[in-house]
Length: 420
Image 1 (cartoon, helix red, strand yellow):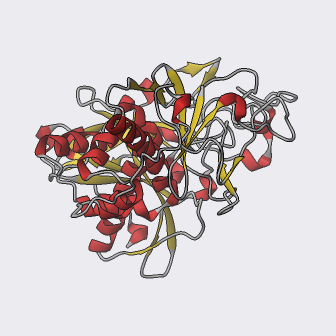
Image 2: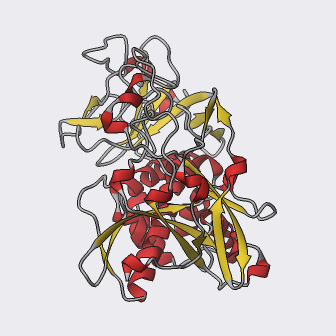
């Protein structure tokens, strides 16, 4: 059961009031890129649960978000993984993706070094039953970079490390299956319960934890807002089309009566760029992984950005309706990145690398968009918050000739004429 206090906490995390649990369950299942990290952190919670049920005196603490350590069990640093379906071969191998998802993500820099253990034990949920518990020194090495660990790493289906609990504590009994994988009944989140073996309240408690926000909640939160925006467009009579392909830069295509298509990227706001006192909001427009310029969004990939704003992010004196709202911005009004055309030839990585001079990156958008709002008659107007931008290593982050400086106003809940 999810009590009122927990529901309120969760709604603050996702910035949506009066949440419908059926929507949470549906959105979580709608995209493998959302479900995968949720299942990953759920296994952390499930592993803690089954260990403490059998060994209640075990000392378990959570790791830090965006680190290589997920749990610390009796002073053993544990990295927790679900299987990699692409490298898993039923009844032959259990495959695990084993690379860093933060920092330099190029090979071999995103691989773990064999002789520099960053964790002690790799815990993997076996596809059938049980948990693989593999010491760092027993993880296979990469065939190309032999001083690094394999990625993906493969382990025998009936590995000697299956239920090897003694690697966590000498008093734990090996070859004992602790996971029952019983699916909770009468769940308000039936799909997530089936995928995680956790009760409703355990799932929501998990999603409220700060260390899981970037890994799992950001994607869920963003897609809930995308789900809302699509339904909002449909409710006013517009035709919405889902883009083709797994990694499309647009979230929805709006078709007007002349069968013209406008590609829309839906974005939530970023807390560190929003202030009720200063009357500002902001959002990020970039990919979740990789280095710039590749990580940036191209102006040519989308036509509009829709920023989803809740009434709690705007002053009460605006007297807007309760719930979510949108601000639609034409991509032509957004600034290009100040490094476009300013790369350093011969510099392969990091700031101002030579890729910035390549034609394929000539329309990369600047990732941090900051807006200031005000009430004009009965409409909420948003304008670029130019004074909040600073120089970076001698460059104006918003160049003096950028059209963004004079763009707007963008008006809350206003549908562009081209959509109609």
